[in-house]
Image 1 (cartoon, rainbow, N blue to C red):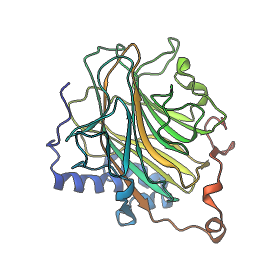
Image 2 (image 1 turned 180 degrees about the vertical axis):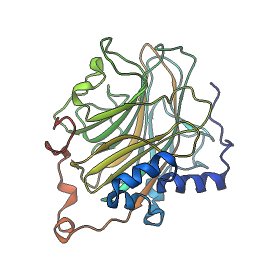
Image 3 (image 1 turned 60 degrees about the vertical axis):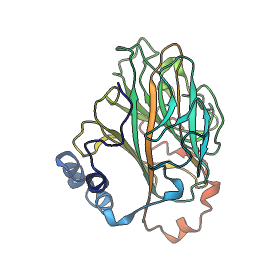
Image 4 (image 1 turned 180 degrees about the horizontal axis):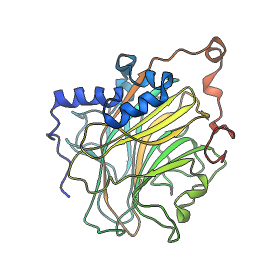
Length: 304
């Protein structure tokens, strides 16, 4: 596949309009989703309640092209900044790269939209390993989990392209979610199966159009949706309740290659604040002291 181009079929105006539609949840599939969820989903449809937070967003035109850093973001490892994308790894073996926001995020309710591209020359099951999106206590710490540290504190969303477990029934590429308080280790040999809270198959590799992922966290509910079919609408991937995440953590993205490789590119990361009312008791909590966890009774697998 060629390099991601800035001038995609989505013009800037269409992209802004389409992004509002995606955030608002319009489209045949998401309309049904809204009707079924009723009052909870009504907040999802309120486009006016979401505000871009530029201090936590990576948006073109990038500043610092040709250097190893840019305002508000730090690079590590093989990461390379171009005018059109941030390449976490090239299509070469044994590479690791990451990009991390300078600013800790103190929003209680937020939604991150990621425009990404995974592509390379490897044929089926001869490419890897994938991208990880992070909201964690520590930043810029390299490690074995898609180029970042294991036993992390916080949230990880893994966009995994290679099945290491030969006995798996999953269809790859595969997106999964993990919440960690530092006590759990990600098992690459099992593709993180034992620490996965939920996941879905997502055919995002080597697409000839733009690919997007949205992560929403609000009042203990974590939702991951994808826009991979060039239809300008979100498709539900993961929906978990009972998730507890603190404020004051950092957003980042990382990728790694081993014996197999791919280009792993981030085109944009846009963080939106969700204007959600909290009870007086919730407002009085020191959200920076919350331990990352998932309620046993509410989580799909009760792992934490």
